[in-house]
Image 1 (cartoon, rainbow, N blue to C red):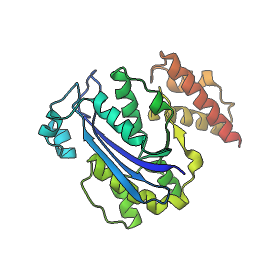
Image 2: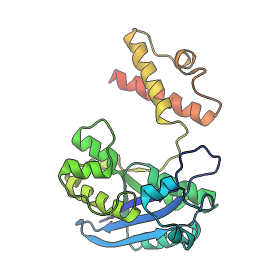
Image 3: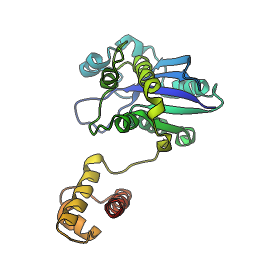
Image 4: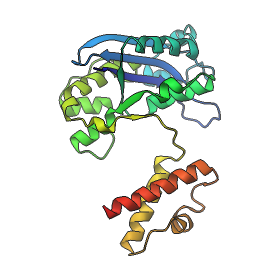
Amino acid sequence: MSDYIILDIEFNGRKFASDKPMEVIEIGAVRLNASLQPMDEFSAFIKPIFFAKLNGFIKRKTGIPQEEIDSAARFPAVIAQFIQWLNRSDAFLLITWGGEDLKRIVFDTRMHKLDDSYWLAANYFDLLKGFLRYKNLTNDVSVEGALSELGIPSTGSAHRALDDARMTADVFRRVIDGLDFAHTQQFKDVYSNAKERRMVKVAVRNMAAQKMVPQWETVVEQYLKDRISLDDPRKLAELKQYFAAAVDNRHL
């Protein structure tokens, strides 16, 4: 039987444009056994390469002291410790609230030119999407919102990795019997964003409403041209696949 690893990270996001990458600055995780009993926890700060001086926005959002970041190890050392901690489980399923946590770990792994195969092979379940399906909701909710929806008291500090992981574990334990683990997945690179995929979906819906046979060339000419860049062949291929899936779904 697999353990469940409830994972949360904090990263040095910012409110201004920059060509420098955002980086993970804190990892928190809770290990639950197959019976959902907490076994142990992992918590560590990371000193980023860029923006090691936390801005006011991040300080207010997370409450992470600058001194903790100043004295923290770099990503390669911390991620090695985290992998060692994960490997205490014979098998595990990562539980995340959304897809951003694992994505950030993969991106930082690559930035530091480390092998990303461990993370690409890891199975994870997006509890946010699972919770939305469970509650039949359409709009995203925060972990705190899910706790409130379930009538579970919120404890700890939001936007601190370990506290968020603990609260996510509380949600997970409450709703696990209603989750569809067929939605378990592995990380894959995505080259389009949600807005671009929504534009394709709207195009398919509009053409269907006009009794038109959806054609990719028409989508590009009438709905995407001069609105988004299709220069990246990976994005182009991804959106074409999304278009095909949207058309198929309308025929079901």
